[in-house]
Image 1 (cartoon, one colour):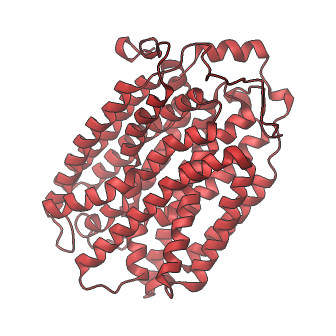
Image 2 (image 1 turned 90 degrees about the vertical axis):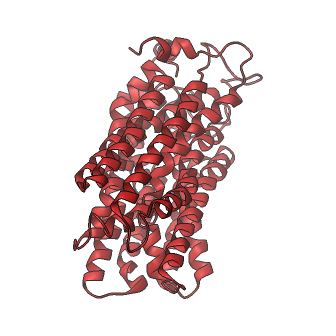
Image 3 (image 1 turned 60 degrees about the horizontal axis):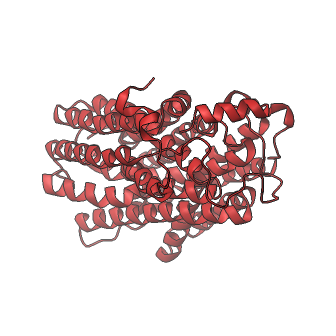
Length: 464
């Protein structure tokens, strides 16, 4: 049980409190932890310092990011029920401590030349902060906005996707300022960058847990009748527990959908800066090329962010299943376009990459609403946490596929876009499999539904 200031009872919203104050609290957390998407800016400085001379430097430099995503899913699955029990403030404070602490441990690791501390700090400690921080604003917002679940989850998760839009130029500027950028990067400059960013995020995330509130028991939006449904066959009026949800085929089909959609996007995102440099190496100087690559990372983050709000909001109108058909089917065609055209047209490459990343982010933002449609709101936070193990799996698959193949191609002397042709072809296949899994999703059988009196009383007792 959370104590004192962190208890849910301390943050129940009073009558007349505006639910539109909750999105800024969610964004304060998600914009901070969304920094994980800017990890690729650290890859080259670490490769030229702590990992210099390693034949698998590309894979090793991805390890903190990969492990962070793995731990994100595990911590979200394990602690999802605790978030429901203790409330979002407890979760957000815990997320702040672990995420910011991970930066400080990473700073120490770089300063003393121990890369394993970077992996532990950013990957393990930071990953725990990611998982707890990710699910608490989402489960809270979906309860404040039962009338617009796609839009509400899009608001929160938009912040996570847009975090790198802030973090990428910030990281690059700090690295330059402290001497941690370029071919002659100094380890001390990288350490100082980690330290300053950890302190910045500690302050920023604190705004979120100070502001967050939960709805009072029995609260509902003015004019909204929960008995009036849209008429869509995929939307249930019943409730399914987290334990029952994982026994349904719908949960595992959606697991495959999320896993492969994430794998396809995260492979590009984690190695975004090196991919750009390999596709378009012409520049007036190495510094200019690095700046252009950082700009590419920022553009991808913008697409990632906007896609989370725009496409997930659209899913309230067209339905979750239809919008995932677009994410997976059109996404596969865009990957095919990049694979066939390579770097012959920079505008086409950028357009395809940006739309792919918009679908990637939108998949995250839409899935909580998809879960709500299939399983109800009863234990949606805990179900969402368990589903995020798909993200953990994708966090390994995507970077490993892209980095391992790229390292092998580099060792074989392959230059430019050819380093990624095989990896992108694999992504096309995964998206097709995800498309098929989405087509197989049907409404959940009544035998998995909770008795009405059980779900109602439990929801009132675990409102977060």
